[in-house]
Length: 611
Image (tube, rainbow, N blue to C red):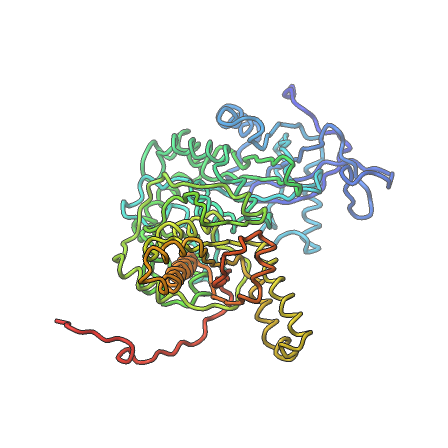
């Protein structure tokens, strides 16, 4: 029989085991090399020997098929890939695959090594007992998305899953299809004493809101810089193309063609691929993004019926509605949510809202509009905030039942507490903070519409610089004897270092240039304009404090003025006539608020004429 016309693996090739799944094992191709002085991108050392990757196989890995009941020949897999998958994406968007003929005896030697690894306890237990197919004549050369040839990169990978809701989901669904299935599997895991999976909602990946993409990025392993990863994923062309193909192939769930059909197979394949993201450590370098695991799925072996049964189960048992998740049955709009302590709220908002996702809005969201540039608010970000892209929302999303606006404001007011222990895990992009500041400066009232409040926002490195200035100022006071050294070391310094650990600080100023003309014009009130201006300033403080905590931040208000006025004005070129009023420090809440005692309401409130 004539062999097909494709590449052949050299007879002397050595294979280095990398990883395996249920149906395949991945190897790196190498040949024995006697020299020790070989570049790190060319060699791999194992058992004291040095291997060199043949030039024709650089940038490629070898995939070999296991012997399984539903195994499909690699020739059919390659044919399906060429005919069905390849036309949907550009070459640089795919983990490519190419057939290669295997030399005689190679698979048998690999199986011997697998058995030896089992005896030595080196092979994963759940993979033991299943070996490579000795009847499969071919392997698949696939694009190497590891960092082996690029040690100056990091690799992130994720499963986009169902980027659109299942068309057979209930109209009042509160979970997307992926989150509903994860809920069900997590309950099964809890009952079996196993661990649960925490992951992102796929709808966040393709959201028009950057903050949603950032929320998803927090669950992607492989890249520690979550903000940078979110920028890469935000409106990413490959993701957008994938969601477009899923939309075109949306006859899934209980609808559409037979589960045995090629159309259904392609639709399910597009919903179970893997995205590999190779990111250079140097931000100026190009990012490589490819989709893999795109073998055309088949309904054979009972898989077609499994898909139908699974969808029916998700619907019948209420998983789309979130009825059986075992998670708290509450929304961020609810009074129950606002009775949680700040750390619990933060955990709920980013562990439960993100996975599975609850389609709802925070209580203050109806008051927050698209940011408008204003000359009265100054944002001083670090490079991190400048990298965040602006976002708008054009997607119509289902919302959970909402409490009234009045109730939402009351609960937000209750949730605003003083949190001193702060961290650097921002729950939102810097653009959302800027949006809040702009809303405050535009819509918080002032007497006679003086608009004299001025805001300076310091984020990340600039925020830390502020608290270094405060620490330096107090250090001089300690040296001069003004502040006792024991008080400084045991009380003040730890407190200031805690402030520095936050995400940002908002400085509240008053500009007297806008007060003086009104004092002269309305002489009868001339002594009142200054306190009235401070009343408005306090309202800005309250609005931003409450709004930041509604987003998941903790915050506290400080007053280190006038001690720090001069060095702060010099550092950020603040007009000399602006008067510093207070400093609102915020960050991720890492501790509980202190106990709050209340004096009797009767002593503090008087009501006359009540009916």
